[in-house]
Amino acid sequence: MTILIATEKPFAAAAVNGMKEIAQKAGHQVRLLEKYDSPDKLMEAVSDVDALIVRSDKVTAEVVNAAGNLKIVVRAGAGYDNIDLAACTARNIVVMNTPGQNANAVAELAIAIMIYMSRNEFTPGTGSEIKGKKLGIQAYGNVGRLVAEKAKCLGMDVMAFDPFVSPEKMEADGVRPAGSVEQMYSECNFISLHIPATAQTKKSIGYDLITLMPSGGCLLNTARKEIMNEAELDKALTDRPDLKYATDIAADNQAELNEKFGKRVFATPKKMGAETAEANINAGLAAASQIVDFFATGNTKFQVNR
Ligand code: 3PG
Image 1 (cartoon, rainbow, N blue to C red):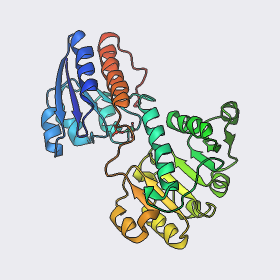
Image 2 (image 1 turned 60 degrees about the vertical axis):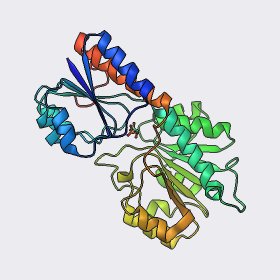
Image 3 (image 1 turned 180 degrees about the vertical axis):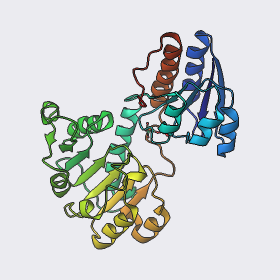
């Protein structure tokens, strides 16, 4: 079988080498398409491949339909909102992710950004400490749990909201379950977002929630820009000059936000949550192994389009 690794944002070389080794040992061919600058290049590259490994690369219906032999797509990472699941399902193409494999990298970045914002983006002047502050985690999944664990080690008081996780599970981790998302926003100095971008969550973080935050509150987004209602974020920051917003995924109106709110907003130049050698290796190798296993045994444990 031919496996294409298509990454507009390439993996670390060690990850690519490891992926090739896993695939080639099982008798598969590997092709690499990195830093491509147009969807046409991806469409051309998928035309005869059997398997595709991507990161945040957009696997649209057009891409799927250009891939006549495609049997499996693995998103080396957690969020698969970049893949047209319906188009894949219609062609009986299996879609998988590699949950948890890059979670630690994203959690470390969330903590780093929280400290960076507390220290005024490392500019001279008096900042504040995160020790003793309240942190609210929205969605207690692989990343949320790791952020909680690290924040607790740093002396923070951690609360979480997740309708899909039992309060007992949170309590067992020393995390306070929030009675409602509103209660969490009202109480916490920091809110860290870890929800996926789905039809239900898109644009779900807006004015009413953000402005519940106490004075000096800071909202951290290392999840997806699509979950923000960007116009309402702008209005919340305008009406509440004490609030801050820091993100790993620049908003569509980021330039405008930067201009209007200066150091109260921060965005990394390019999404870098999973940009560590460790995360690349964990997610990349898991993706390659899942494909090898799928072709060898039909294992679909991590399939997301059932
Ligand atoms: C994920 O969903 O796994 C993260 O957002 C990382 O995405 P990336 O592979 O594009 O860096």
